[in-house]
Image: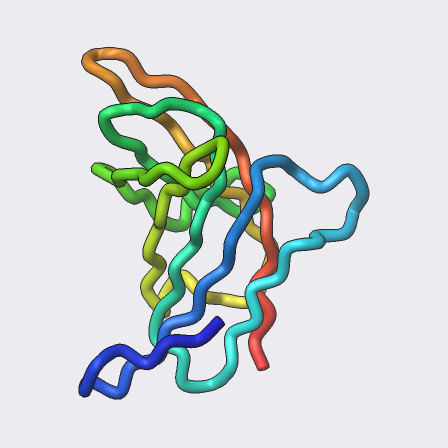
Length: 122
């Protein structure tokens, strides 16, 4: 999905991700990034929570952290919740990624779900 953001001329792409890692070597969830896209919005489906807030850690399969987002909020969607995570264009490099979602409530934090996807540049 593409969205043109107001009068700024910036283009955002979005991807809805269910939780889980692929069972095979293939990555079924692909984020195609055409030329001109300046940011992405990952919409993470989760059954956990609701928590006061969430944080997400974007990592390579080797475990190198690429980006960390904190203070994320969720909204109800069907029998679960959606947590949006914006990604700047600097994080949209071609490759495979794992996103770890943590839920926070009071002084407790726990890993809620893990997601995987592949960025493909056009």
